[in-house]
Amino acid sequence: MEKLTGKYETIFIVNATLEDDKIAAVVEKFRSVVESNATIEKVEEWGKRKLAYPIDYMSEGYYVLIAFTSDRDFPTELDRLYNINDAVIRSIIVKVEE
Image (cartoon, rainbow, N blue to C red; front, side, top):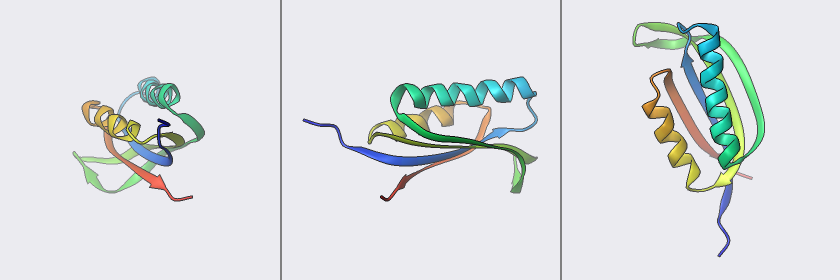
């Protein structure tokens, strides 16, 4: 039976108070996780931006968008990985309608 696939976009915000090399390591970690489990369509690093509201007394975050195609089980696993990583302060994964 063929696995069902879908197109997804995820945006995650990395703690901007970390050093630049640690931010780059977190971004690369999640890029490689997505790459090993899905087909990446685009990666956009939006950089440091002001948050709409403070999160844990932080007013800035480092934003990254990744668009990918994967089977429908992978976004749940990706969300779990975001939640256990202390450097990621917020994340969202949405299914893109074709």
